[in-house]
Every structure is written in structure tokens, then in C-alpha cells.
Image (cartoon, rainbow, N blue to C red):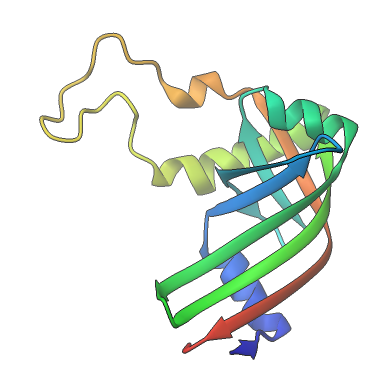
Length: 148
């Protein structure tokens, strides 16, 4: 097992779009997978309002894990500590554009059935349901690897 260099950490963060975000209500942890966009200083997120947003508003310190896993003994993993920040105004608009350009363009529309590729009548476009944008300012980061 080894330690990732600063450049290797940057490479992992730039090359991935899914992470695990951990927050707390002060008593218990909550961990969720979520897509992100990284600009070199912040990780940007878009989500439905719910438990994690409520908790992060009260307890803004969060932890994030981003990994490239190619096998049990072949991986790179980055751990981040950071601070939750709600986005408003121009910062929110800029983040929405980056999320649309960099992340959501990678996803297939939720209304396309994976087998028949027909549109499902009652399905809702997930992107339209995610109006809340936030970012995490990175306060510390570290990385470990094995076999890579």
C-alpha cells in the first residue's frame, strides 16, 4: 500500500464523477453516493433537498471519498475533509452550467428504458427534480493506493 502524490490525488478527482459524501446530524453519520464536478478548489453537487441538506446546513463539516477501484488489491482512493456551502446567484448559475456540461451530459436520460429504449410514460426526468446546488470547500485531502 502506498500514498498518493498531490498530482495523483488531482488525477483521481479530475477523472471521476461519483463520490461518497458523509455528513452528520451530530449523533449519527449519513453516507450517500452522489455525482460531482471538481474545479481544483471545490467539489460541486446537485441534489434533491432532504436529510443530507438539512444535516449539512446544521453541521457543515463533511467527508468525501473518491476511488478508482480495479480490484481488491488494485485501487486509488482519495479522502477529503471539507465544508458545505450553499450556492446562490451567479455562483449557483455557473455551477449549474458546469454540472450540466460536465456531469449530466455523461448520463443517459432516465426516461429511456435500458432494454427497449422506449420512453416510459410516467417516469420523471431526474435532472428536473434536482434544483438544489451546493459545493464543498476542500480543507484537507489525502490518498492511498495499492497495485496501481
